[in-house]
View 1 (cartoon, rainbow over the protein chains, first blue to last red):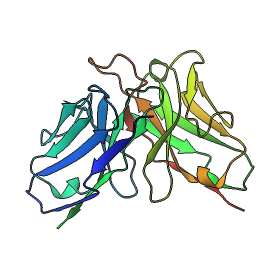
View 2 (tube, rainbow over the protein chains, first blue to last red):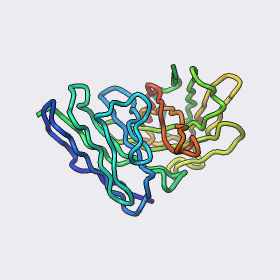
View 3 (cartoon, rainbow over the protein chains, first blue to last red):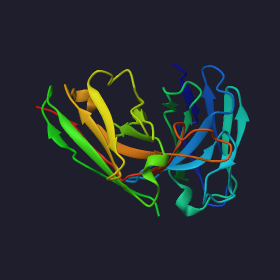
View 4 (cartoon, helix red, strand yellow):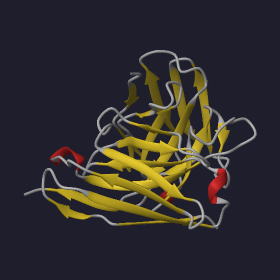
Amino acid sequence: EIVLTQFPATLSLSPGERATLSCRASQSVGIYLAWYQQKPGQAPRLLIYDASYRATGIPARFSGGGSGTDFTLTISNLEPEDFAVYYCQQRSTWPRVTFGPGTKVDIK
Amino acid sequence: EVQLLESGGGLVQPGGSLGLSCAASGFTFSDYAMSWVRQAPGKGLEWVSAIRGRGSGSHFADSVRGRFTISRDNSNNTLYLQMSNLRADDTAVYYCAKGLLAPTVSSSWYYFDSWGQGTLVTVSS
């Protein structure tokens, strides 16, 4: 099973700042990685798939990059609604897709 | 607008059974693989099971294989998860999720672009 590690566990930033979240896979997943946002009491929302493609309706301030074992999600200019938990997910070992433990982005 | 509405959650004793449903609307249901993903209280996301759009092909996480079954009724746009021999560690919010189809993604099995609001399953005596 491919294990995804996310860091930092918590990122404390102010609105307007840039957020850089990392996801590392225990073995290569190619580009087959997605990012989701989850707010308290809500379902997850797909942000990025195949490492760098924005899902429909996702603002351009969200961008993804990386390949192999190291990936990043960047939020270029944090808006108040961006404070949430972010999960990465790999599909390289489909059907056994796995998620990372999440990074919480909170307000400094 | 895609809508997914889960139902059927509740309190069940260890060893018991429970069935979940997910009513879908706003898209051609049979064109997409559908999945169940769960989230234990205060924890992360865990993929549980998935089923192809047409036909009976399905897959399960090791943690539920042999205890859970997944099915769908394309004529009524509904996804199901039948859970048996439930354990305390099955306690979670269960989400149904629609698979993503996109120009660069060859199948709707892989990523999840719409989710329901979730239904809570509590396994406790």
